[in-house]
Image (cartoon, rainbow, N blue to C red; front, side):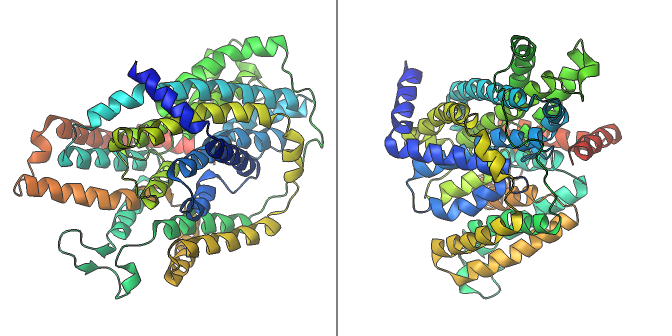
Length: 501
């Protein structure tokens, strides 16, 4: 009964006019940035963090969530129409979706992607609603030692699932942890790594770091290597799939939803891995494997369902444990902190309207997407003709204004410029910036729980190994780290990410 009461609270919160408006803005903006290749949900959410400071907590988080899963919808549009994925998770969709478009079935491919995404989003949101409350109850039993071990698991997993070299990913985590130490010591009150700048006594501004590393760096990268975009067709028609299409997409959608729901919980980018895993599974179980790469319905339906399901279930560790499963969830934690909300299991008990309102908004947002996306295909097609050199100066100007408006601190603008340059250098060195952001977000929490656990145990480090949950989590982290360094696993991992690039 409590479950249904909580759902009712969530829907009453999400269906208020204000929250419906921001949900609509979020899914439309998410679709837009998904359609425009090269911007991405991570960079967009980072740029919009300053705006959320002026909004109500529930409205801002509903909007940011809508941008994230809306981008999964929009990414398939460019993947199908111009063979250029708007999101990394839509890269697999381009393989068969573009071939369908070349055969004059672009409308059917877009409809299959939208319907598969809608089903997957609906089911995975139901899973979030089912599993989040019991996980929250378990998390409430965690002490400082358990939280420290849990964050170690999250950081190790982000290393395992990051692009490129594992050593580089490990270095990015270490750099993020070091950046998180900038500020005032939480116990002694002593400034550290502030370079004598008083404005950094509270630490580096999360918004400035995120906008620089993801937003500005991504803009610089795209301006350097802007690709010529040629539309396959100026007008898309035939949006209704045939009966045979429906029959052939049922199995892939169900399997993709299951795969995405499971992998989305994993730290490091479950939505991306889920789409590749789904494509591999469909190719193996299909009775027509020769069709893959030639315009297979299963090659579109499975991956699109998987990446959308993965995007939704990545909210489970965020809402229950306060641990980000990917860079976007790290930005969501930043938005919560900006609003004065402490991420973690206490959110469900102390602010149930926010907790359940976000979950309910996912259902509403997915319905908005499927209702709005297909009729607006013509608009998205026209937007693809806008050159980047027109869009990006405007975006950078709004980013600078937004970052400055949070604290009215000119040093934040210097930080944006500096971290934008750092982010661009990391891209050129083929270093994945996502582990850096996860390390930066989790660093202060990791330090706080480490020191608290040591104080409670009177300086005895064995407390991390004698407490069953903490010891189990550390063992899991060790196993993951050992596995990713195995030669066979490293080779397979490099093949997957090389194919994605």
